[in-house]
Image 1 (cartoon, helix red, strand yellow):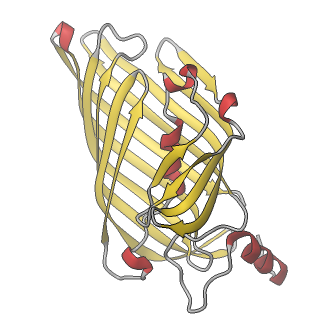
Image 2 (image 1 turned 180 degrees about the vertical axis):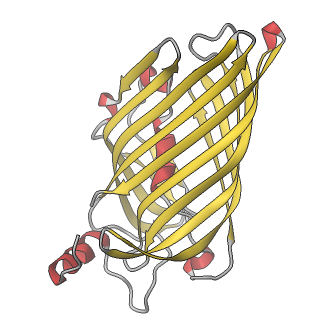
Length: 273
């Protein structure tokens, strides 16, 4: 993508012109929806008494994000799925669920200054989807941690996030770390800034996964790293990539059994326009 005059003018119209004075480190109202593709996958290895067991979950989605003007609760925000595919399973079975019923109907709510989306209204999530994944959890991938007050800084700043997922398993993931500005880059011909977030991610859960011999409880924790590409001229996230390497334990209380687990997670996000 070349930085010709016509492209800069078009980008200014689509993404909102930069304010006078230079870099922007705050979420800004959009003149047109931003279209993102999201790809995430998690692989778990369980050391059972009869050998290793693998499970995999993955999501592929295309979403549009629209940010409105700031109000008392933050910026109005709207997120709409354009495509959604979810895979979940293990060594013996893999299920594919399409999110057709969610496509085209917006989830609406607010975007806080610290980059968290709170959903107030949206389409009903059908059972066949809610049993394997929480689509709303995907929204966190569309946002980057920004310096407090929107001011560039040479110092790292604290960055934390808590997310809940209700499927056949109820799980909570807590991230505690810090973010920092990590230099300039060029992304698809656009001048951009790298933001790196590093910290500890801990997930605890309880429920009845498909194929489990009884209710399970689990906890795993590890180091998560995310590299964000932020366009400081237009105030928009262009891309991100993240990885997580964690380990912990899975318990089956009814069988008085505890098994070690290892988890590897990764995600990729790109702005398509």
